[in-house]
Amino acid sequence: MATASLFGRWAQIVGPDLAAHTTPERLADGELVIAADSTAWATQLRLLAGELVRTLNSELGDGTIRRVNVRGPGAPLARRGEWRVRGGRGPRDTYG
Figure 1: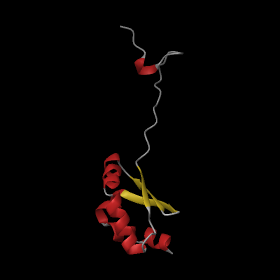
Figure 2: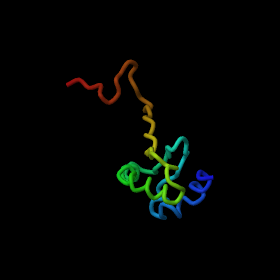
Figure 3: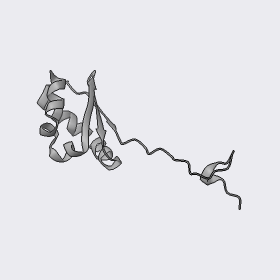
Figure 4: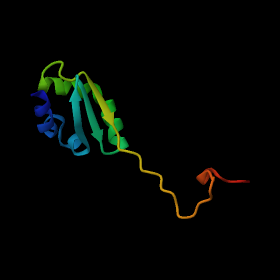
């Protein structure tokens, strides 16, 4: 029941600013995993983790959330260019 309430009322519980940049992904064994859309928001959320746990527990019931795990956005994949040298080390492959 707490999980459905959390996911359904995320914006109402954490506020519109935080909800615009974060999404709760899963809640298991008292650990809430939250995805942030940028590294800046992930850092901000990590700083607010203690306050967020208190706020969520006051809304969902004491002890529902024990820990918050914040995930930032995935790193972009390195793309190889059209021209490359076999056995080369990429941009670090310089002589002189």
